[in-house]
Length: 340
Image (cartoon, rainbow, N blue to C red):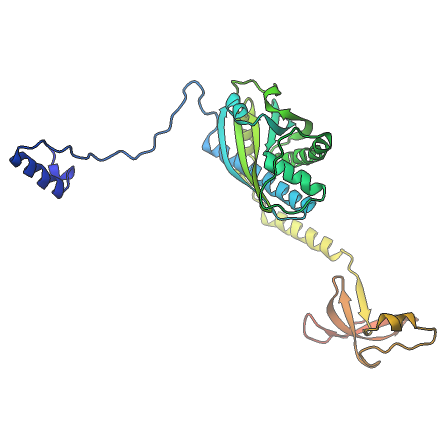
């Protein structure tokens, strides 16, 4: 038994009664629609990675993205940003079919991951990198010429892919030892035979922004033996942190303090400053006197390393050597009587 008011509104009930009295056809009530999202699941190719494992992979590639963005900003002298936007599993042929016919793909060997890692860079980013490395400036939009890559362009991008291999090694080696090295560049995605077409791979998609230009960088990682590696990661950095006892923390703290205190710093005593024109400097002769902005009896500035004034002092002689006696500590706003 159910209440009709749970399905129909009051207006719909009134309209239904009116139609029945008038002999007209009945109205069809609007039943609530199930809005729950349903996702297809392929039982022939079950998902290999858990949410926790995907989270670990995301952390690895976020670290990689930060290093690569910093590298791009350094060599291109423009702000660059790279962020991980998705991680998903699919068949290799699905990834391969989605690639354009002409695209730069770096092939990286990362032992002990079985198979090769593929890194494809969108052509909009590739040509922007090449143009900037050759001295080009800002563009309002991406420039993608309709032609094959030249030998010079491939040589420049090989340098980029070699650096990517270094960052791959750094990102993975924080939690599991990986020896990554660049192997080759492929320009035709259809010719890559390093991964079987029906093999399950993990695709890590990254959004890249270089100035006004936007594009993507994608990692294609074979799933063949990645699960045991991720299990090692779970036992390492991300899920179990070894807590240091208080005595170990004190030893580390004392060691850091000792090393910092031993670091060399340059100290400079500034007796005065002045400004001369280029004409005056060219006319200087032996015996000329240069007048500074302070008198001989005033204290001199003592700057440490970066040029910031830390102390004021009085010039003098000690053991037949020129010396400065510190008269005021700027940092502590007080006086002290030790000599330098």
